[in-house]
Length: 213
Image (tube, rainbow, N blue to C red; front, side, top):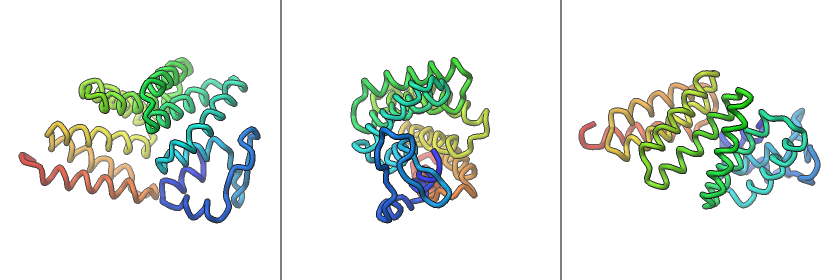
C-alpha cells in the first residue's frame, strides 16, 4: 500500500497527516502527493486501518474495492476485499468481515495471489479467535503464515506469527508462544517497524513469565 502504510507502521503517519497529507476526493484515483510518491485512497485506507481507525478506513477501502471491481483486476480485488474485511472486523461487524474475507480468499486463490490469500486467512483466524474457536483460528492463521512465507513476505509473516503467539500464550502453550514471538522478531529485523518489534518483545517476555515456561 505504499508510503502511507509504512508511515502508519513506523509511527510517522500522525505527523504526516498533521502536515496536510490527505485525500482530496476519494472518487479520484489520486488525492495528493508526498515527495515523489502518489498517494491514493487505497493507501490511506490501509494506513487508517493500521492506526486502528475503522471509521475512516472502511469508506476508503470500500472505494478501493469498487475501483478494482471496475478495473476487473482480480489480484488487487482479492487483496482489498480481504483488507476491507479486516476493517469491518475492527469496526465490530463480524458478519460482514467473514463474508468479505471468504470472498477475498476465493478471488485470491483463483488467481494464485498468495499475498491476498494470506491476508484473508489472517482475518478469518482473528475472527475465529474472537468467537472462541481456538482450533479454527490456529488453522486459518497457520494457512495465512504459510502463504506469506511461500512468497517471502517477511513483514506479514511476522504479523501473523504474533497472532499465533498470542493464541499460544492464551492457551498456556508458552514454549510455542515464545518461539513464535522470537521468530517474529527475527523476521522484523531491519524492516523499520518498531511498534511490531516491541510487541514481539512483550509477547516473548510474557511467555517467559508464564508458569511452565
